[in-house]
Length: 160
Image (cartoon, rainbow, N blue to C red; front, side, top):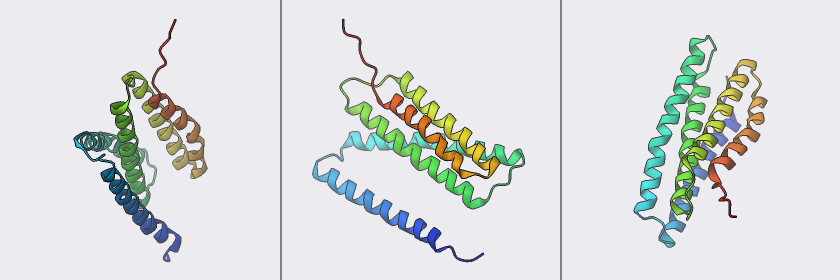
């Protein structure tokens, strides 16, 4: 197996762009006095919640191995990393929106939206692994979008 130049560029380029984005974002937030105790609390809470999603992903991957599906180490580590980083970011955004809104998001709507995202990702990932066709993951974009919109929009109050 030869060296895959595109994979190396994506691996290290993604890390460099991620670190630069984090650094510039913190710099801008510091200028606008956004790095306060609330910010630290939100992102610490998001990080701890994301470990529950990571644990669920590990159980799903172990279950796939138990059912006889052959998984490669790079694919498993990639899925775990994506689940952890995505759940950390999405949870942080939800908590930030909820802490900074005048009207709070209803927990039932947030749980419903997150469950739509989680179920669609799990179903389409399993379909992709079983069929060896990664295009099934593209089909998970509409339900994920619906789930995120449902989770992040407050319920409209009915005014008579």
